[in-house]
Length: 113
Image (cartoon, rainbow, N blue to C red; front, side):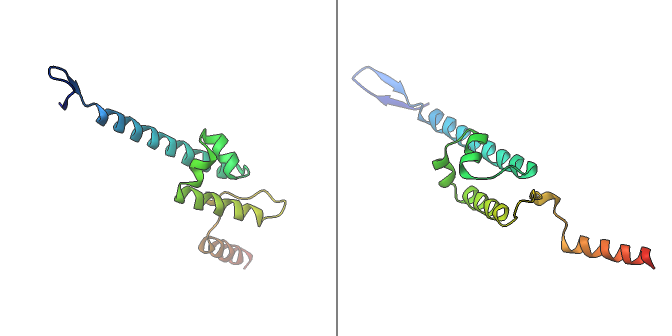
């Protein structure tokens, strides 16, 4: 228990650790919402911009700009979508790897023989 002397007979508890803990919980919840929104939007092919992610996650755009990892991911996904003209982009998790494509090609070649 933390006590602070205010006057000759008055003392008050220092509850600042509770305020700090609550701020940490809010920050963690905010980050979780932003990451979840980004994943949902990528999975559904929704246009990803700072504004759309902010609305989906219920956070401010300025907060997103100040999170280096989220900012990098939003910029990466936005650039990827801009490079794909008119076609609906495939989410990262659904993209086939080079090794997977090679195996499929080998299997098709073997079937044709």
